[in-house]
Structures are given as C-alpha cells and as structure tokens.
Length: 109
Length: 119
Image (cartoon, rainbow over all chains, first blue to last red):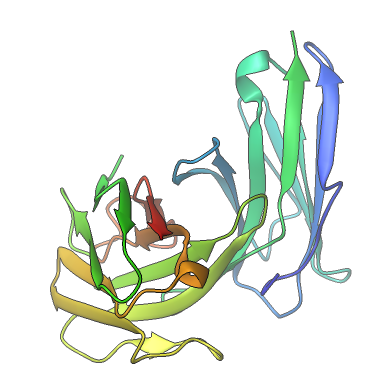
C-alpha cells in the first residue's frame, strides 16, 4: 500500500471475543486515524490519535500509538457480528491521506 | 456528522467512452477532496488531491489526462475517466475534509463509492 502494512490481513473471531489489528506506517505523522469499511461502501471514521498521545479510548475501541516503532494498534473489545468489516489505518494531513493495507475482520455470531 | 454524496453508485460503460463521477459535500465546505481507487480486497490507493479553484495534484503513476479532476466549487469535485478501458474497472471513492474544522478538520468524510465496470 501507499502507507504501510496492517496485520493480520484477515481475522476471524467469535462474538464476544476481542479483536486486535496492527498498523505500521512509513513517514512521520501528526496523527493516525482508523477507519472502517463495510463491503462495497465508503469508509467511516472511527478514531483519531495524535502523535503526542500513546493511547485513546472510544466506546469499545482502544487505540495505541508507538511513534518510535511507527506502529499503531486497534483493539475492539467484546466484538459483535455487526463489527464485521474491513479496518484501515490512515495517516496524512490536509494535502494527502494514505491508507494501510487493511484488516478484514469477520465476527461469527 | 458531515455528509459526502457520490454519484453514481455504479456505472457500466463500453470501452472508449468517458464516465463522470460526482462528489459533493452536502453540509460543509471542502477545500480539499481526495480521489481513491480500490481493487477488490485491497486498500485504497490515493489517485489525486483536488483543491478548489486549482489544478489537482496527482500521485505518481496516475495519468492526469486519463483521470480528469475538476474542483470548481467548495462543495463539488468531479472525476472523469476518459476513454475508459476494461482495466479501469474499479471502485472509486471520494472523500473530503471540513475546511472550517467544525467536525474536526483532520477527519475524512467519504462518499459511498462508485463501482465502474468497463465492457
């Protein structure tokens, strides 16, 4: 991808379990964002973490950022079948936004 | 949240024809809009950055004469795929950021995408 890699590429879990996705990026950043995409649709913004933050929470989402390793992780706790989607990290600014390769999450009911 | 409308949702065309895709920000002013291309099961590839009233900035490898971008107003950007060929078949997505940062200027708001199939 233009941005970097995410792993795993695909993740299948049971409802109620936690899902962790990782993202690595290539350049210096001001912030890192996570987006969700349902199949064949546009993306929806989930959460933004700034470069001076190490961890951020929003509902069942927890994001960490390690700028020294140029990596971030997204944790979804107590997953639901409705969380089934692809998840992408993104970095950029007003001029450019690049996305990671994405993780396809399947939550089995 | 801010709304971005993209039309059409899908289009089928013959080789050699041109296809125009519209992207509108409905309730905010978008100084900058981004156009992405997505192949099945892959990530979004940034094609170009479109600034209102100026020429678009294309990513390396993207043909500007092939993918014409016009950002004539703060609420409308268009992507025209000229002389389309089967290899242009893809999912095209536009996005925009809120100029006034009412919704957090660094966030992107996405259209629902356009599936282009060239026969």
